[in-house]
Image 1 (cartoon, rainbow, N blue to C red):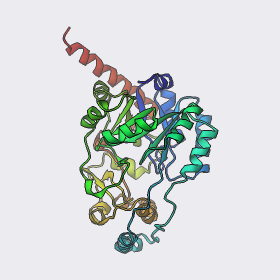
Image 2 (cartoon, one colour):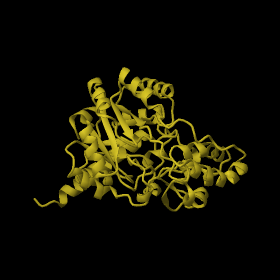
Image 3 (cartoon, one colour):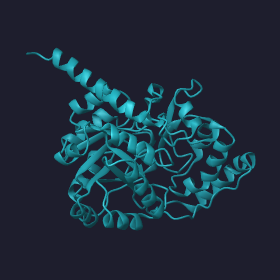
Image 4 (spheres, one colour):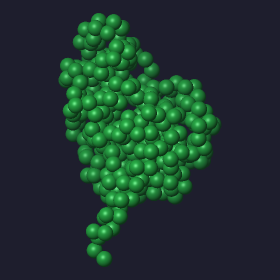
Length: 357
């Protein structure tokens, strides 16, 4: 790991920023206290809401943490396609007795205001999803003493992030739960993502800056594997969803290991952008017809998802999960960090014993 990140945390384990409520102050604090790098997810929050969570987190721990921002999205959606999808969802709105949301809500997620707050009152780490900031922005964070991480899904995106001045790239394999952090949302490449180990090798040969690897990682032995393959740290999301400190809905936590949900799939059904979730009724019925329209579709379906959760209906919820979801362990986050660290050391020791002397 780079010296900056090494100085921050005892273990090369990063808790992924999962937007939508899972990655709040309680989870990030528990991870930080145990020696990992905790993350707040600022996506879908207001700038004030983000800052309030930062203040809560600072009251809970003096340990290291990061904040994740969504990059503003270009206005590429076809309004007519969004309207057709709204009509298709009319039955869902009737079933859950809730109106569909307004697709014309803001597409920049309060990005500029959030950046201004984080530059005025710096945090140790800031990461970015759905694109790469400008060099001016990354340079400003560097002057503030903040370590920057850009999430990438290709060697080209990683190279662009290095050129822009990012300190680290987070390499996201197609196995990852939640949204794929492609910098350009191209429906022609749907279902063609690259697995983490292959992608990690490509990026390692392309950039000279540190790499955090993420995508389907659930065990310390997998962390050892990505470190051996060239990563400097590993980021885990689904592994932390079942923790009591996670803000994920109880139905979501239970679904991770529920035999009713046997596989995951990349879908645009809930947000208009490819995201991996447990296959349920909503994905089966609407996934094939969802347009490439983020964040418009996200806003259209947000009320439906809340209503499904309130009704206790996991079949209508966005159950984001990585491919390793069946390996989730319902442990306090601090205990999970310690267990992952022990598994990592055991895997390293086993590898060392097998190595020729």
